[in-house]
Length: 429
Ligand code: UDX
Image (cartoon, rainbow, N blue to C red; front, side, top):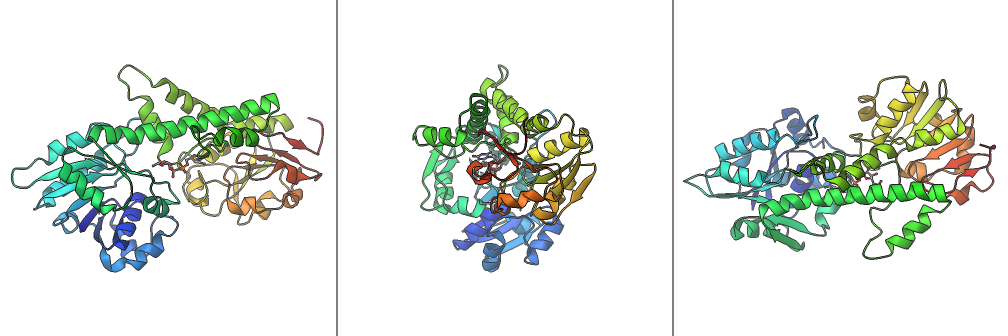
């Protein structure tokens, strides 16, 4: 099948690579010609595990272009994978979706299906369908929301639990379904498909904020979140996934989609989702609150920040709690030494103040007064806790529960994590 993809971000590129690998002919369009140039040189502009290799393997079947007509004319299915950025007030802007639609409409000369993967407000598919209506050819519009996670996009497309197709015409749904072959498919109307995406991300946000609040409560009542997680996660009605406590969720989708959902109801706010967002905001200051258990003031302290990306496996710091934490530390007069294997550049573009970039964890923690862990990178989890003894005062505040408190095993340090008993072998607090 000839398939066009609008938008060469991580969703568009991962979709292009996987579908090319299945034997389809792919035309991938992006208005950013520098990005297209890079792709044509065999370089991948986003960090995504396995993506560069899969693009390289299938380069004969993928044409990267900035020219809409080259991409869209003759395509049987066009996937819209452009970004839908958030406005100041939490609503999303559809400017990129509509400019892609305008180019698609101006380029198509035969029947085609347009599948919207971008996360768009309910009703957008209907509006696009109306916009695409033509007397000479038939353009069907379906909603095909994407549930893949950054960092595991290829795996998530290949092993999706389901694909959702919202269509007004059976023929259009069947065309998109045939592309994804054996993946279980939920076919519904366009508006419900669009709603499924928001409802899924909103529910995940609720789950995360719930477990974070339970973790905070565990600390207050001297219980252990690891045991509680095992106890509730083994109940199939609850499930063990997405139940890891921490400093709160970030990224380019979950916070944005949750904020959009929170203000979707005409009647006012979506109360539970608003509460999840509020808990997430507060959870971002957890490490700072913990730091004040050990220091009356952070002024003049040197703090190591290990892990900056919003989660491991990505170079993104979009809506990352590390950014808020760094800003609060700097505001309190602390100096920062930071380490991250991928996200340093992205982080530095969002934070201003006295920050020392470190190439190794050892460099970052050397002679510091405090260490915050914000992302559970393998490099951190693989450390031996003894290695932290190079700190001036070995106080580790771990926002991602990278270590087992039992591993402290008499070492002269403080290990304070989320929802678990603090091990304090240093001094009375
Ligand atoms: C998310 C959704 O998973 C995906 O379905 C949707 O399409 C886009 O948004 P992504 O942004 O890649 O994907 O991140 P995800 O892996 O879901 O993690 C989001 C945040 O939640 C991260 O900050 C992560 O650290 C946090 N998280 C996730 C937890 O704190 N605990 C968990 O158990 C899982």
